[in-house]
Length: 368
Image (cartoon, rainbow, N blue to C red; front, side, top):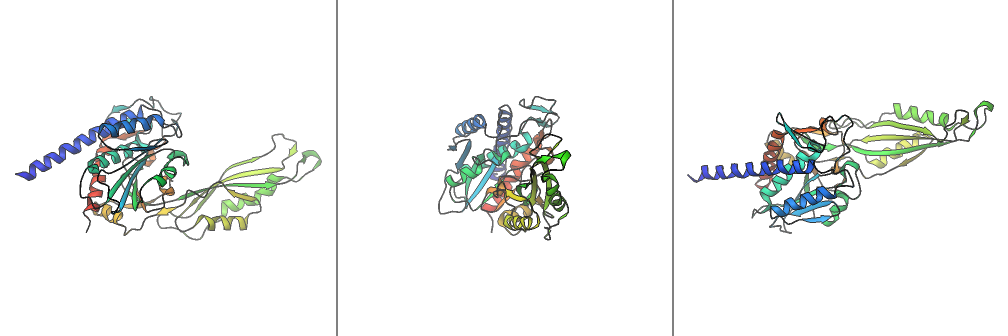
């Protein structure tokens, strides 16, 4: 007779956590939290943890916590998602800061990216927080500045955390396992000429000088193609000169190149190849957002496979790129809805997300 009561108790706890997660997400949607302006949602999160008797720490707009019976002798799993949002799409027909429940959906800015993941991971963390005898420690982080890959987000907080062995990054993946992620390298490419009067054929046109480089970027193909992430992709996204007058030959011409790198290349290799093939000066803005992957025989991936989850390579970049340990990107919601007008998440997705995260971790904590 004990087993039905145990199951009933577990179901009640799960229903409680699902309801708490939904109410928290509604509270977060109602608070503007653009990147670098997340102070109020950080306040909301710390108040939520205090309400549930969870000890928390704060570094700027990042909130983090470790499980009640944290043991330094045990390995540690990170649970992470972000609480900042982009600014609302101009196509919004609903108030982006009003959480509206309709037709099984919750509308609002950040509901899908990544509010549903965030509150699902928080509910999961609450489920395990005070349990004794876990074979792994758990550390939870609600990070800031993810949408701009800012330096005061996960990158800032990592140095304050205990040693992390591996982690789960909550991003909308339809609860499938994103085991690899493209890196992002943005390049400033500049050619230099000499200004002169266009009518007198004076000067050296910097725009003409950069054209062969523009053609190279549009046609060059890197040899290594990833089965998960495909080929390296280079896109010239901006081109401009220093001159705004029709009768003056420009002395400088600048391009911005967006380079999406698969996990088979280091950024330094890509940069060396580019610099060897173009004449213009090439300067990377940053080498921080590197491509990442997690081995398919990692305990996280095995645990997910046990739940029937598939895996793929993600073309979008997340805080996963800034973590120097293996991570799985997975969460409720659909990446296709991110940054869209009238953003929403299905309420059922949050409920399933909590159940899936709990089952995934239980498979690990009891893994043989």
